[in-house]
Length: 238
Image (cartoon, rainbow, N blue to C red; front, top):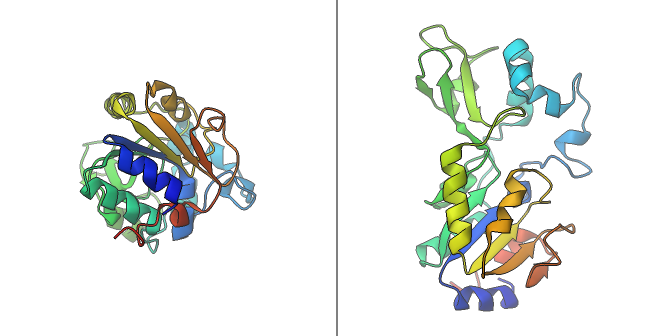
């Protein structure tokens, strides 16, 4: 782990991690806004249109064609960043992971307190009766997945035109307010309202780990441009 960051971690008692797509790119999950991200690939409709609430309602089959092709990465495994955060939680240092990702890799790595701002591909519910379905059910289905009651199954992911979950928002804000160290990693901080959460940091220190500049850099106590897996790797500390 980066030595300067490790020193700040050792001094801290209430660490919160706020992360985005860049945390999972080293696991083979592409981000959205980089030069080779999903937003720069060609489809019949722009991704932000396909991944909208209204598109899901009126073009559900087309939505699922894109969703299965570009949003589900079942072979992806936790990378050193995910594992390091789980280890920091185990050590009692890290109190919460607040993520914009929907891949579930933080939980797979062992993190327990994970607040998923944009939901998860691992949770799906029937729009008719509310029955729960796991990711395997979506992968095994063809076309539009349907419940045993006949209703359409919808992923528990926050689409464009939808609001974030109030309970998750309140939990995220509370943790950030308590933090004596907020580590921001793998996010451009360009997606709102999620990116606005960092304003709730009161007196804690801030570290930014991202390959490109962010709006939080000028406020940060430490800015690191190296790959996040390399920066957070705990191999030297274990």
